[in-house]
Image (cartoon, rainbow, N blue to C red):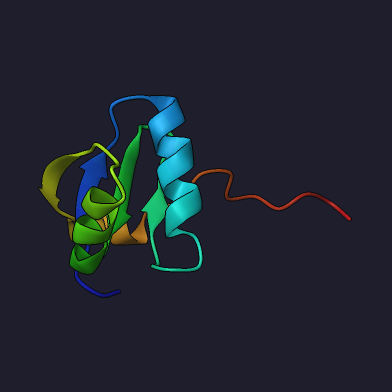
Length: 76
């Protein structure tokens, strides 16, 4: 995985809107804990679009290997 930054949004509504914005533009991972890993380039895009977020720092190796939200697929 490429170098990623861990960010956290101030509330669930901001997170939902920001993740919708990121989809299709940048790769990212998000966890039920509220943490989201994004590439460094995404930070300026999020800021320019008016999204508030807190930068927690670089993602640790364990985070890049951790399961994402709702990892199991539904039975078909």
